[in-house]
Length: 524
Image (cartoon, rainbow, N blue to C red):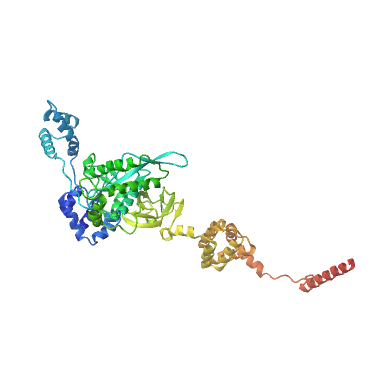
């Protein structure tokens, strides 16, 4: 998808279709077809550029790359060797063809071999003089020689890499020391560079370092996804220098050599105790280099940059670029994806359980895509655990997460007052309510299977006797103990002459109190 976004960006910049085909190594007819689709699309080019790659792919349907003959790919890689061999004595095309067919029995016949070899020989061109347009390209690379600073605590020399960028029209140069050549450090240095320049060029030209190019290829290099996102954010395209073609980036190579002479050499006797100190010194010496009058020219690099290039740079976006990371994950049975980097689970709508998902996450956000559709968005958490959204869960999972004494009491109230009172008594009797959730689930399940009137009577007996267990309620229902309870309550007491009423016990209590008071007075 990077080709489509680069084509969109160049088209927006007013670049002709013919020039786009040269810059992106595409057939002109292919570029024409892409531009026609862009013009007829319901979304504007700016809206298409703002889409995530997966959504854009679903919207655009760019199609498959053109078919290439495998024999020609093998043949092309050996052309330089054969042309060199033909300069040696007694070596003929026929001898080279026989060696070729011995190693590749299904290769070209002799006539096609000679034809393609002649065509490739004619294609060898002398070195061209490149003309650089103001504000068009920014060449970036890491210097081969490292610098270092001294750690104050361990007295150890810490080696660092020096990022070098230059605008070829003015030769205006930027340098920054970073701890490594990872993608994060490369993007950080590149972002610092654009903000130092105060704008972004149309084209970024990196070397084929791993932080910028995943797979090197002379015609269609595979760009690091993070670098693609960076270029889209700042409105430029990435066209790496060709492999083993240092003349493609001659300006930055020359800039590195001048940095060696005017920055490295000038700082050779100085000692630094932090990366910040080293970068401050690099900034000062690089600024001196940019402000020095160029040989055979009446102006400095900075004057040329301010006059011709800076006005043509694109304005920088308001927000800083945030690196996006990509992962291919499967939605687990708990309707979550597991981001191993953070040891954290993020919920996805349960309808997507078992499906493959593309997860794009930044420092703050996590987005989950299924078949090109955004299905879940979460705030990123760097702690182990779960981030769930209630709507993502099925009814069973929602019930599990919502459990609380109030939740169960409210559910019981929907069925009967007797069950509600039983649940209230149950939670009042226990200091740890989580221990009772499964008992509540069992009572609710039992309620659905029993006669409501019988179940309510059983709940009343359990509450009255304060035996608040599922087993006791089941026993009452199985033995129909509520019928015996009803008979006992309705049976009247027998009349007998020895029965004493309440008056008897009142008089007895009063007599006992008077006796105690008399004994107390005598003792005093």
